[in-house]
Image (cartoon, rainbow, N blue to C red; front, side, top):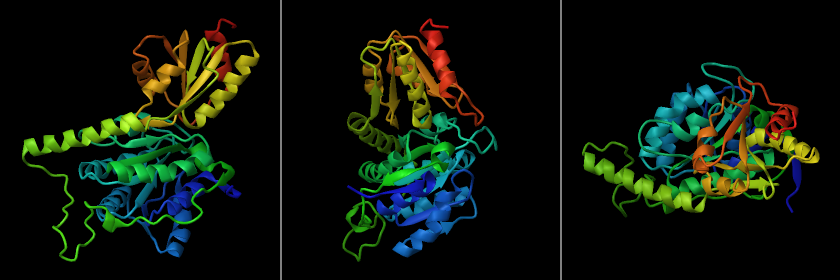
Length: 355
């Protein structure tokens, strides 16, 4: 079993990226994710990689675009308003069918907002990450260890499906310290020359690979998009993920993701001690959304409670997963305020008729 060490979430993400074979990082500082850049600025040169602090978020994502086109594993990280600035470049990356990993350590918004934890990027990351018909794989880990474990998976699936992958964290996960173990004790090697699409030099042994997202003939663009969506369907069939607890006998099921799910689970366990039949299901993939897993966890419930650090951005996806067959209520805090387990418990008591 791998030895555990105490690490801050952001630094653990950075170390996990190196061990997953990330060779290039391009970013720009923004709270609360700056420790990722600071860690990689020291660590990346020691393993023969490239760390480059760009002049802006726009520049950073376009550097990722160029690097991804060469087949090298690369990454950027930012926080909410910084991700907004990157969306044009992310659309170009998706339109060129290139893999990369993007880390969003969310903070409050809109606008400059604040620097406290938030989950108000849900809509942006899952439904509006750029213009055009495309998706990104989105993971929502709930602990520092799960963030570490998700990084390699994100790089592997991004490569397999040739698309961006996003790790959706928040300021709470990024700043907390927890024991972590790294399964990848050695740095993975990713050979760009084995990627048949990569523009990485060919020694006159094959035709040129051209990285492009521009199709002036509508039929060509449509064919390209339809082929991409066929890959999405395969991804949806194989790689949705959620975990549930106490749902078999639950009258009320809580749906929550990320750090909020930890707080909600504490409330659920307190509610069960109080005699309430309550369960919880936590989506780990936010796209593709684990609709089947959510529906299965809620099949015996009379009602559902969605808990978030936002104004309820995931509620519609929960309703769709349930085909609007059950009432879905919402409890959340926003603007950087973290919901307390006692607040969630009070809402569960109200729904269970105990208040």
